[in-house]
Image (cartoon, rainbow, N blue to C red):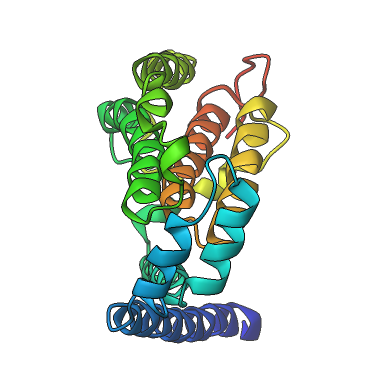
Length: 247
């Protein structure tokens, strides 16, 4: 009886402390982002432009060295600020009681909508990375090839769309709304979903660690998608071979 009374209290306290930590991360991220908006990109923009004009075409090493010496911490604070703010905000959502982020979508068609939207998030992150590179002058004038980088975007979108929809169709119409994502971690589900989820988790962590929020956030969305597929598959079929689960 004591254990049954203490367990909810323990988890409630843990959720509260997790929420407090998430708020701290959110405030830190917003503070960094706000501070970045007060900074200029270059320590001395006139000196930077003068040295930039003297660079020989094709001198990539000289250009990289010049940027490293001339840039302030504006972009780092901006990127890490948004990354930390995103982590804090997601942490707050997760800390909520019966958080929707810890359960699969509330209906089968909603999961289908998620599968359709995911390619837009991923390709959007890729295009945003290119635009950010152009806006921050990360490439010298002799290597301005942003148009070339955008050429594969339509093909990339088609591939990701087919990929996402194909994995959704694997469920074969199994409708188990709001399934706990804890069920995703089981030997009785499809190991392929777990493998993909693990890959997304690793790439998301690396993206956030380096401040690449535009890559990390779409990968977190894919992580949620694969965990939802795994959880629903677990409830619907019980084993990777499609055997019925005893419940």
